[in-house]
Length: 196
Image (cartoon, rainbow, N blue to C red; front, side, top):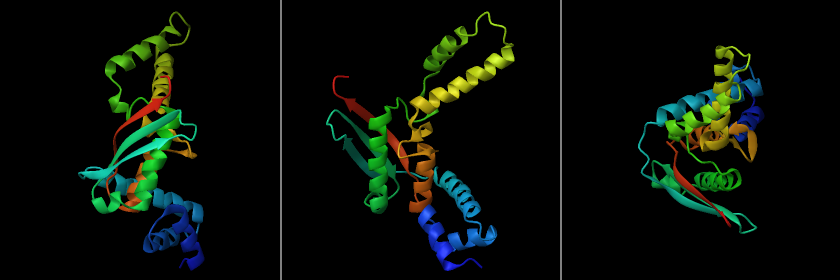
């Protein structure tokens, strides 16, 4: 049976409920790191299940950097007005808008990248290896790696979160879904920079 101070520490780290935290610690024999990992996996599963539910509420949030030269506006959706007014949801919207202002993503998710754009990028990358001595299978693996890197640079959900580079925006949203218990989706965003 997990001791209460460990349960509270796990709750602070993950935002999990008391019973979930206690159960995770019991299942992992009191190992805090393994319990965090277990809760993250369960959170990802919950998030995937909730991902199909309709999002008809939410907020439009604007962020302008302190220098007044760059800003972003974001439409973040959830299922209920109750969650839309929740402080954690509002903070998430703020963090996402700030992230967008800082990183300038072009798309929300990889599926949003048009096949034409991706084909053109692949063509440019493939030209680097034209006439080279690398086997076609190796070149294809390298190109696939470049595609994934392109997604991580240009797609919001695949970017490393500016406030915690150990997680992606997609993982940040999954954590929010697990904490708030609702489907949360980025609907659209726009970034403004002075002179651009």
